[in-house]
Image (cartoon, rainbow, N blue to C red; front, side, top):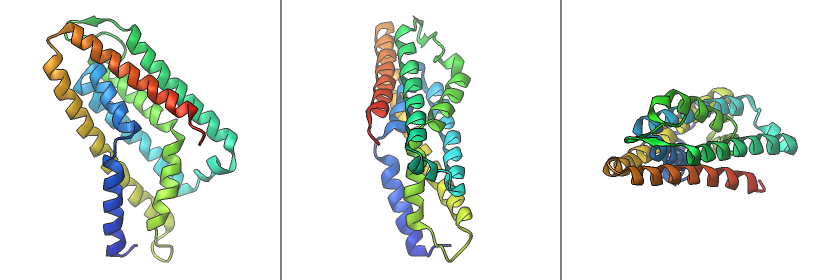
Length: 209
């Protein structure tokens, strides 16, 4: 396994990446604004579970396929982008009732938020590329089997990124708590969440790599 110095560098670098606002944090915050804290937490859990698919793929070397077959990369990226845009549009079409949304993204559908978030993360090829590009910088090829090191470090990265997602959910929840008495404010937050999801989908689709 890597030396203590390498582990320290690994944790420090991972923490920096984890808390730089990125698509996962924005996605979790958007689900919170749209459906409340429970929906946001379930979305964070879904992203976390989906992340393990990429960890295992990196350990097996499957992420190399995205480099070797650009068409496959583009197909997966566009599928994820379209899915995000569809989720965002569904928020704009949703109605509100009391202090929660009654769409499929509402707190009562937190289970759906979980499964949708797993799908979003699995369909994000950039996560696979990140693991394949980031983890080898800290792998000790002369130590334990490389695939074991990939899984251990990948799990740590996934946990740290998920912690950052939960922080974003809690911050977004504070905003919702202060505004939940206003139906108008709830509608604005719901639309803001939809706009973020559509924006993330468009950003993913338009990126060249």
